[in-house]
Amino acid sequence: MKPLRILPFRTAALALLLLVLLGVRAQAAKPVVVVLHLQDTIQPISEDYFNRALDHAAQIKADALLIELDTPGGLLSTTRNMVGRIGASPVPVIVYVSPEGARAGSAGFFLLESADIAAMAPGTNAGASHPIVEGAKLDDTTKQKIENDTAALLRSYTAQRGRNPKAAEDAVRNSKSYTAQEAKDLGLIDLIAPDSTTLLNQIDGRSITRMSGTKTVLRTRDATLDPVTPTLRDRVLGRLMNPDLAVLMLVIGGLLIYLEFNAPGTIVPGALGTLLVLLSLFALNLLPVHYTAVMLLVGAAALMVLEVKFTSHGILGFAGIVCLVLGMLTLVAGPVPEMRVHVGTALAAGVAFGLITIFLVRLAVRARHNKSLVGIDALLGQIAVVTKSLEPVGQVMVHGELWEAHSATPAPRDTRVRVTAVNGLTLTVEPLPPA
Image 1 (cartoon, helix red, strand yellow):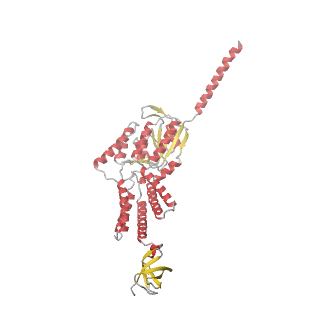
Image 2: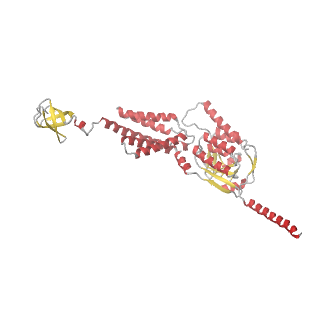
């Protein structure tokens, strides 16, 4: 009977020990926070990067996604997509404007206000979110529609997040911009934190209401950070989204292709030029292109060709270069200066490309009108000297070569004649009048 009493005691002790070990292990498990550094304009490439981080956080069931934001703004269409994904995210999203000196301008302000937790570092600012349609003249009604639609988008989630919809709307209608302290005082953000570690420790245990209406308690203290870094594709495509670079690639690629047409068989200029033009068109396809600017570029090309064809004393060429510069300057209708072609780039590329194009086309046209300097056709119109009297057949010397010649008019030795035709190996000549 004694062993029967000891066995339950040992089993209970082992079970108790196992529970203690499991409890210690559970306490030792740290929360995981996925970190995304969004320090670029808001455009399709940054949206892909954002979506990848959000999918990764949902896949590993992270406790939160922390977006460290520093952006001048970007495209409203892309912003709408990103805001929608933040609202539908199964993982709580924290948007933190940092480091010191960073900003959440224009589209960045929409992302900040859409987050479950909105935070800013000291010395940062956010706002100035008035919608801009660059390069287009809109009537008052259309402007009001765009402004009302953008303001409604912001109000649709700031009130549900428990933030100040009126102060948020001022950033849209009046282009208001707020410091970190002003945003905190107006109820636009939840807290100010000097760094991400302090931020995560401060919000630990805070209860938040998701867009779906469910409540969640954040677990972020001493969290393990899981950074999502940009891939090589993200970095390359992000560089291509620079409008200045896209325009320069288009100009250089066009010149290289023109060089290939004028020197067939070199291969390298044509291949490199085609690659640059295709990369430029890819980037411009993702950017908001102003199509009247494309018409200006086409008109510029036509004017520069006409400058070569007709004598205009440079007027057509100058008009073509002006159209080229204006077309490049207004080609990308970006909502922020970082997404537009800068004046210096448009002037340098436009003037250089225009002058080079006029010069090269002029050379090509002149070469087509020049007579051939090789072959039998090069003999036509040349002056020859009679070495054997033409009565009517004899010999002449032209270009240091002796040719059989025929002349309808007899010509004595040492007479100067002009070549009028070439018939096989016999020249037809005519005597020149005496000097």
